[in-house]
Amino acid sequence: MKNIILFGKPGAGKGTQAALLRDAFQLVHISTGDLFRYNIGNNTSLGALAKSYMDQGDLVPDEVTIKMLEAEVDANPDAGGFIFDGFPRTSKQAEALDEFLHGKEMRIQATIALEVDEEVLIKRLLNRGKDSGRADDQDEEKIRNRFEEYNNKTAPLISYYIAQNKFHSITGVGTVTEISEQLIALLDSL
Ligand code: ADP
Image (tube, rainbow, N blue to C red; front, side, top):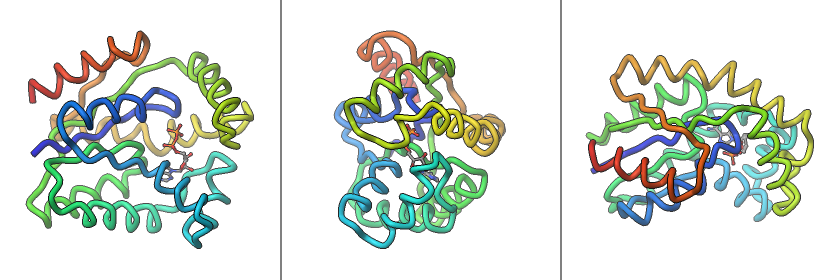
């Protein structure tokens, strides 16, 4: 069983690459961002709560996010493994994930970061915002706030996973195929 975390700043390409890895390795792809957007689209109370944070580029509170993630893992008991995309994003989430997986005799094999410079990411996100209509992708100030959330709350997880010998990093600049080939080779080597 392979359980992988895709790691990286907003716009690094986690969602695109997660979908390709899901197909290549028959994994279940869990994107917390997609789950929140699904809830917003369906006007659930979770969606209403998440929207107030997401629209500003702030992280949704840990308690809510952790509960949603655990429910999604539990909803896939037959999975051959998971790709976690956009989770964990805080130390509390990382610790909760380790504890939760431990209780199921599962563990994370690898955390893989997609590295892209912030100025490249801003261009990508503003472009994505034009097509997707995502409020958090349309305003440079909100995008910069997401980077700040990442740098303050998510970047510290790099040392958390280095300490567990699970941290890998590859460039997120290049064609989608070039990047996915590197990811597939890395997963094959695990
Ligand atoms: P991106 O990686 O481009 O920021 P996502 O779809 O992963 O896009 O996330 C969009 C937003 O959803 C985040 O800015 C945040 O508000 C919320 N979100 C997603 N995952 C988490 C998480 N693990 N913890 C807290 N908030 C989250």
